Amino acid sequence: MRHVIGKFVVEKMETQNLRCQLDRDQLLGVAGELADSQKEQQELEIEAKDVAARMKSRKEELAARQQRLGEIVRTGYEYRKVDCRKVEDYELGRVMVTRTDTETVIESRPMNAEASQRKLLLFHEDGEEKKYRPVDEIPGDDEKAGGE
Image 1 (spheres, rainbow, N blue to C red):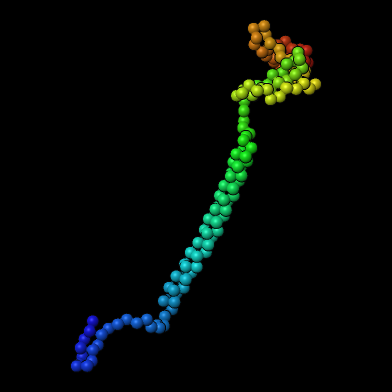
Image 2: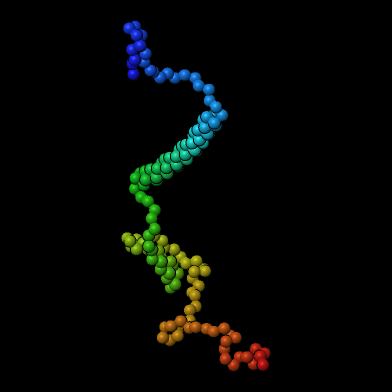
């Protein structure tokens, strides 16, 4: 805003950036802002380190995956879980393992001594497995075991 004071005198208002002495309360307010700014910067630096660590980890995961996939492309195969059928022929004394997806025999070997020993399974005539009770549950055995 301009005011004409005289023929050659004009007064106008303007704002300038000048030094101002702060009182105690104003200094405490600025100190609080400084502390908040420093804390925010520390938190940002911690966050940046965390992001950098996550990015590094992700890069390493991708590199490992690419190496694994590249090896598959180079060799043309990979290892997978495949269902197999294992046949133990006690008459011939041989064990044969066959892939069920391609019916390819992947192993044919002689039985070792331990495997060639048949397990004894006791069955009733109707094919049901026999059930046994502990000796102390057999009726009438109390007198034999020293009971009164």
